[in-house]
Length: 240
Image (cartoon, one colour):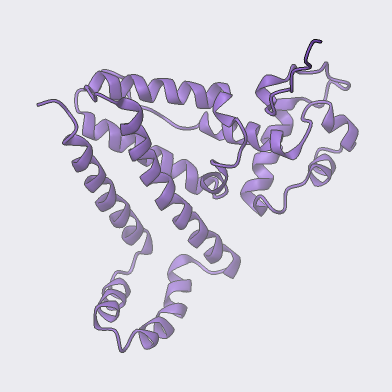
């Protein structure tokens, strides 16, 4: 008896249907979904609300994207198309890896939902932009001479995703306050310093942070420090 194969649960494994109305396309749906995700977050996105934004019926939407899970795969792949990568023959591997990490972080902060859904977005890595990103980054790390380029990449990207997730969550909280980051910190700092009064090291850290007028400078410095530590560790894996 022949067994019936189970469909792969991914938008990339499903053949696109013919559009039922020329004005509605999968690309247009995804672009609008990204706009909504940036403005309102993952929880606020629904197929019904997206259809309303596009002045289309939900049925028309489902002809292009079957589920919200598929929509998230497509949205993740869409924003990966924004990430710049150094050429594989870059002469300074550390500078090039830093450029790649900073581009990933910048994209993750433009799209605060991205880092938090990377592990949940189905088979997003099958998408053309993410697949191209992985191929080009692997070619770069292979050209540098890493004996296991995939693990080196995983180490670098894991650091960037971890920092970006925390940073994006913080910036989302700031945005909801209606204040600038500097204003939000200025309002928060007295309470933080009071709460840490009995903890000398923590109190010193808050005092140092309060002395720096630009919070973006603080975040950039923290990211750069951690990135340099990661690159120092990766450098030990290169053949001498």
